[in-house]
Image (tube, rainbow, N blue to C red; front, side):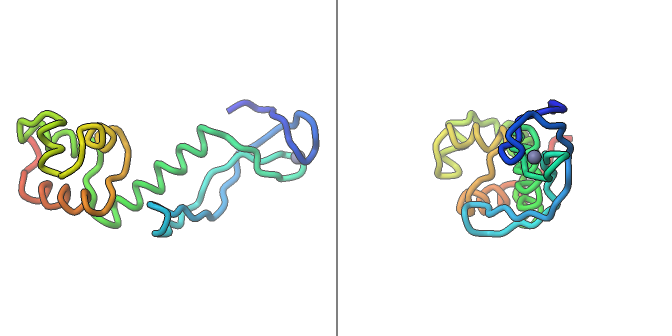
Length: 131
Ligand SMILES: [Zn+2]
């Protein structure tokens, strides 16, 4: 994170720092996930200064809380599961009832919506992790 950035309130370049605040993310636009978010603030007036890296990290942490809450397999487990079944993303997609692009997204960090999450959870419960 750069140490200085432009503050709209102060109308000039200011030193900035990381602060923690309680935040709420709404996963799939409805379910609230509460967590301490890390944000960049102006050292002089305390205004929130957007930071893409921190924002992305907050989203990933919120998604992980949501995954734990609903026992949704994590991306690496989804990929391992598909490989253990000997399926391509296309074949796995047919099993889940989605398209291959969605499988690739789930394997790289996207949270599956409830209908796919249910099927993934069921599969993960029947296929043991690779030894
Ligand atoms: Zn400021």
